[in-house]
Image 1 (cartoon, one colour):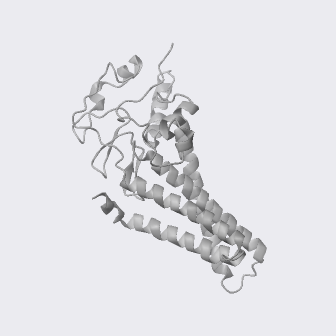
Image 2 (cartoon, rainbow, N blue to C red; image 1 turned 135 degrees about the horizontal axis):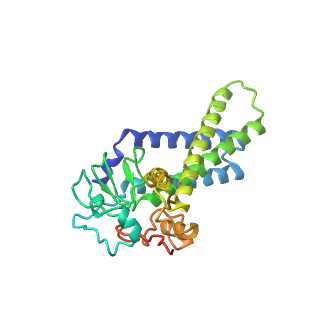
Image 3 (tube, one colour; image 1 turned 30 degrees about the vertical axis):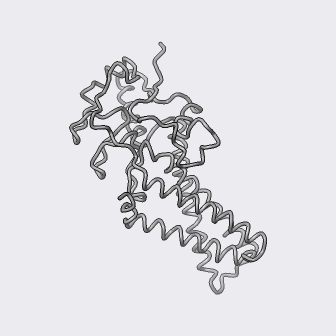
Length: 273
C-alpha cells in the first residue's frame, strides 16, 4: 500500500502549492499578458503544463519508490568490498554494525530514525515526499528538484514580463500580482539553491550525510597531519554517470534506473601511492 504515503500533510501541501502556482501562471499571468487564445499564450501554457507534469511525475516516483533496504542476509566482505587497506584500518567491520537494527549495514547505508530501518546510500529523509531519499529514488528526487526549479523560474519570468508589458499601476488586483511575483522569486531562489547543492553532491559523488561526515573526517585528518579524500569520488564525469546513468538520453527520465545494481558495493578511488 505505497499509495498511503500520499496521505500526508506535507505532500498535500506540495500538491496545493503546485496547483496554486499553475493556476496563477496560466490563468492569471499568461492570460493577462498575451491571452490563452493567442498562439504565444497557448505555447507558453503548453510549455509550463509540460514542466508541471514532469514535476508531478518525478514527485510521484520519488514518493512511491522504496529508497533501498539492506537485505537481512547481508554480511560485509572485508576482502571484496572494494575499500582500500587504509580505509579498512580506519573502519573496522564492527563499525558496520547498526546499533539500532543490530544488523550489518553496507558502505554508504545509514539508519533512518523516521523509517526505523537502514537505507542504502541514504541522502536524507524528506518530509515533503514522506520517504527517505536513497539509492533507488535519488535520481527521481534530483529530477523533481530540476523540473520544479525550471518551472518556477519560467513562471517568474512570465510574471516579470507581464509586469513590464502591462505597465502595472498598482490598482485593482495588481498588489496581489506583485505578491505572487515576490513569492515565485523566493521559490525560484530556494529551489535553485537546492538544485545547486545536489549538483555539487553529484559531481563529487557524495550524499548529504557523507558531506557532513567528510567535514568531521577532514578535521580529524588535519589534527593527525593527514589528508582526507572522499573514497567514492572518481572524478566529475564518472560520478555523474554513476548517479544519472551512462546513457545521456536517459538522464532526464526519473524511472530510467536499470544501470543501478544492488546498492551494497560501490567503486572507490584506490590509493595508488
